[in-house]
Length: 499
Image 1 (cartoon, rainbow, N blue to C red):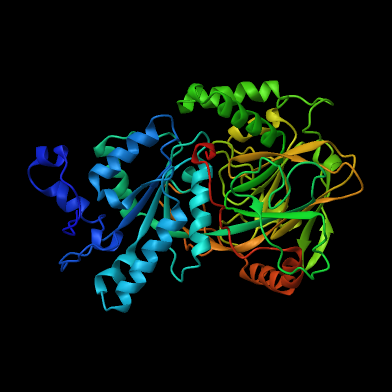
Image 2: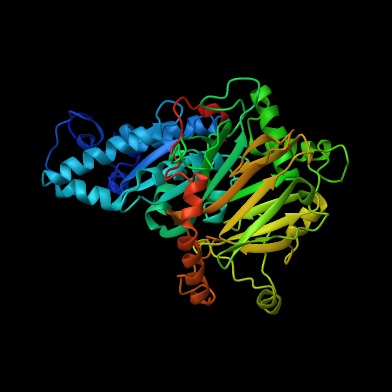
């Protein structure tokens, strides 16, 4: 495609014969002179209405990821479709935006329009979608491209929250074309980004520089502290950080998720379709004690594991957690565990009494929900079912102390890990705080609500303004703790291990 043409003709297009197929697809295609260095540009008479860059995790969804890769490459310019197993998205987007800026500087109005209209499609599980959200956040663009998500995982909470469905898609050309049309028609929606920081003592055994021997998800990794002279930057400690957009959870649900991911690593050939995956997940729930309490399970009640504090009006306050709670979820979107909404719709009078507000995805707050066991979780299937509503906040801190347990399990946006807990007098600290916003693409079936959408229920704006002031006043403490500015992912990521 060195001639700068938009799309390759497919056998399906030729069979249609009337050219309507070509006219439809050119609204999404980007010419080679923008995508490939050294390509010659030609005068372009038509500016695409919805130019897209497509990232596909070819390892997701059994064979579906590979099939989608073929379909998108057939319909679009193959150079705007990327296999995440072969192309690091941060490098792809850095190169693309560098080219666009150069072309704009040279007076290329077409490149400027491509940049203004660009949208990103990411096909994979929740872990893959979060990976791309992190990469886009890392670019720190003045106008970051909005992102549409294709559900290729097991839970697919992110796609479901914005109306893209939770079932794995069909991959034929007609279905993919229909999805492209939905991307073109989708509206942009801002959602909050959440930054998670974890500090722990370096292990006495094993390599611990730069990363301690933990099986952390790709969204959590080591980074340099802000200052070597900072009094909190103690020798022998490691700090990890990452980001999430849907949820952070700890306890029994993360334990089952960890067991599922471990089993899938050992026997990837068994996990080829969504139905089998969900069935295997349920069986592991029984085997891990998800449906009953046991003193021999690691997912003991949260109150035994950690002291939990939340930020209220500029000050840390202890959060009371009922003794029966074995799982806690910091929820940003109304979609968890395959599309369920743990927060539900609180009674208005009770909400006012408990200082709770309506849940929005862009209000600078997340909802804190607890579960006793899986039977408690099943109440979400009822029309007005919900978990135990604990609080809403813009910041939370978990402090794990000696003797609580040997380990606990944590999960961010579908990616679980096993977290060792202190064996001596040390403390492991996990802190979550607000970290800007990203843009998502939402269909008319979107379940997420914006506080700025006229169709959303009214909300007290002054309350949210005050929460912003609290964040600014407490910024110095966050800086000292080591909160990083980016969500940059390390090199050498094994895409097969991302959901």
